[in-house]
Length: 120
Image (cartoon, rainbow, N blue to C red; front, side, top):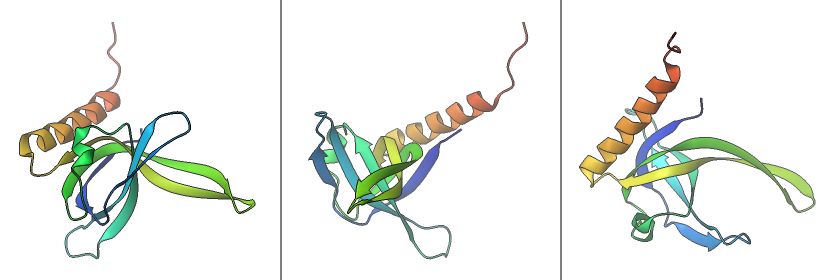
């Protein structure tokens, strides 16, 4: 199972670009902190972002639900890779009920996928 649930702060303004396929992708870095440990930053990509994405800026606190992906690409004549979070849902923390619902839906999906199959 590949499920990511993150809460953090955008450490830079999101960048939006159009892909050759016509899809829109937004990318940003999300800084997270656990207890008193130093902040850790993770790259996040969000395909076809909702209207919420247009209002995001550096410093905004968000909840991200998605999955981890490692992609390979050619650059400068060599193969490189990048590990990133592919967001399925991004919700500003200030939207408390929507953020809580996103977390609960992600957890419910994990629980449902982990449950043993029912015998008939």
